[in-house]
Amino acid sequence: MTADYRHRDAIVSTEGLAGRLDEPELKIFECTTYLHYLPEGADASYRVESGRADYEQGHIAGAGFLDIQGELSDSTSPSHLRFTMLPPESLADVLGRRGIGDRSFVVLYSRGRNVWATRVWWMLRSIGFDAAAVLDGGWEKWVRENRPVSIDEPVFAPATLTPRPRPALFVAKDAVTAAMNDPHTCVINALDADLHRGDNPRYGRRGRIPGSVNVPSSSLVDPDTNTFLSAAEAASAFREVGADPAQRTVVYCGGGIAATLDAFLLHQLGYEEISVYDASMSEWARDAALPMETD
Image 1 (cartoon, helix red, strand yellow):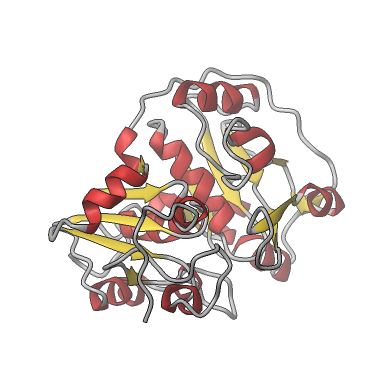
Image 2: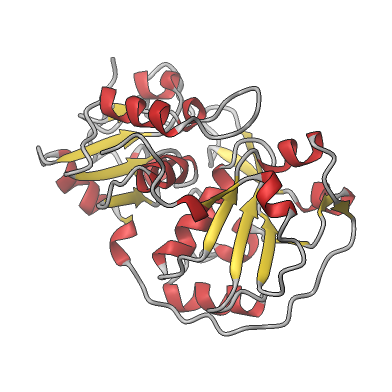
């Protein structure tokens, strides 16, 4: 594996996006969501707040808004599983009504770390849509460079988005249990180190999936620029925990969001068999039949 991002069109710079704003097939979407963590013992680990209010105060010119929990998640899931992936046909229908079609080029961004943008990118990839990119540096870098901002919300004409599902990109707990005991699979925890060690009780039972290694999604983003680490730095972070591009990788976090940033960069680095545990610790830690490990 060379230390280079393989899919260069999947990471777009602010300069590159600014030069494409007039392209007719371009669809830009902000995906910002906020999590407000709740005290230990609450029914859920966090309260979800859409980022729409901030979007309405100003956003990248020409960008629409996607409410990940409100319109892109399965509302029939239990209350502690806030972001369950929709069935592929349902997701394609929702996104098609929002203007994303087979001929679109989609750019996604969010405020703060780009985990919300990578979540939607991974969802799109899971239904076979590959013409999507994440804005490197997100909203913060765009504003810092004084690039075009608007309060107007575009209305994109509905389009046809044909689902071509890749079911292995999202997996359930049974697949994770099997991966946990498979020497040819690396299970990666994308949560911060305190949660991985078991110092933080956010999800109920403390700790991690046994045998999993830790590459926090926060460690893969430059804290000063909000941009992704270089390919060499990201490759080193995964290599140091034993991840091997020739083997399978399963990534989890709290609710299938932060894990997608790790998965996104693994894909850019040439890893091919990558799965995200959709329900992650929001499900695993609540199931007393599933094992946990702490330092």
